[in-house]
Length: 380
Image (cartoon, rainbow, N blue to C red; front, side, top):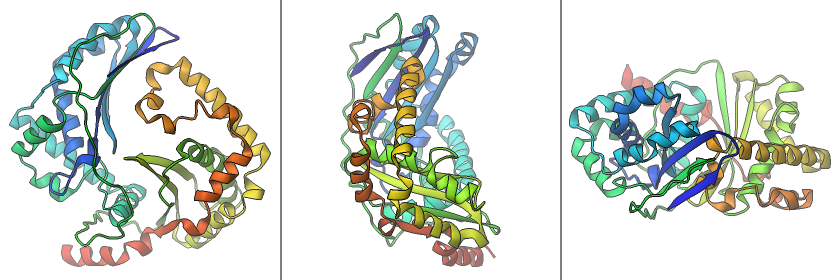
């Protein structure tokens, strides 16, 4: 499927999307999609000097749900490369030498993630609760992957893209290529520590505690839940920032978000704090979540609604690099809901998903303390 969007400016973007991604992976090839993304960029490596000369940004990313390759820049420059890059990606198979080299790089990236405390906590927690290894995958699987595994995976899933999104002021994109239709049959749900789960503890985080609160899985109202996370933690004037940071000085930042995996959403509240502050942080989050009358006020709603409307306008102006709502399912877009959204509707959705007792509260120092001790013993 090709989607042509009209840019309001002379800036253009061209996006090649492969549906499926990390949610297609099984044990033995966890991390294969992310590795494949790195390798498929080599299909147009010979164009890098020309892209740079023309002021074009080229990049790619892997999420749980899709792989996206894109170029952005001035409209008349992007047009020169659209079809060429698309054709480079179609059916591309890297060499075994490229595979072995890039595998080393991806393993280094993997280790970097687990040397960041909040990331390490989140990744291990996803493994424990959902048997989900995220796009970063499993070190064990990455190390054991063979070139033949890669070839089979690319041939099965990534010989052709699923969609193309073209953002241009002056030039629609037309092609007669055949698109791939990927069906994801994996059910995303709470598993609660599968028997063969693998944890990674690559660093000792002695002075800080990572706190992550995972909500019940969201199956509808995705856009409104996203709006609520903005009400709770969108900037210094938000309730969580005010209570955790500004009033109590317990943390530099607070994160509250919903992210999509398959057809569900996962609400996550995350705070990194000093060890001695961890209990107070949890109590403060509980206080805020269980008192919507105090914190989800009409004033707070109006501020977030107005800022959301302005943000949507800004995205339309800069559409060339703001196309997430065209990649995600329509149910995740606030665009068609924001004008009629009311505080009453927000409160209804809030009551379904944001009561503190419905969250799984994890402190990494407690959640994985036994694992850390076991791994220390092994390493010694």
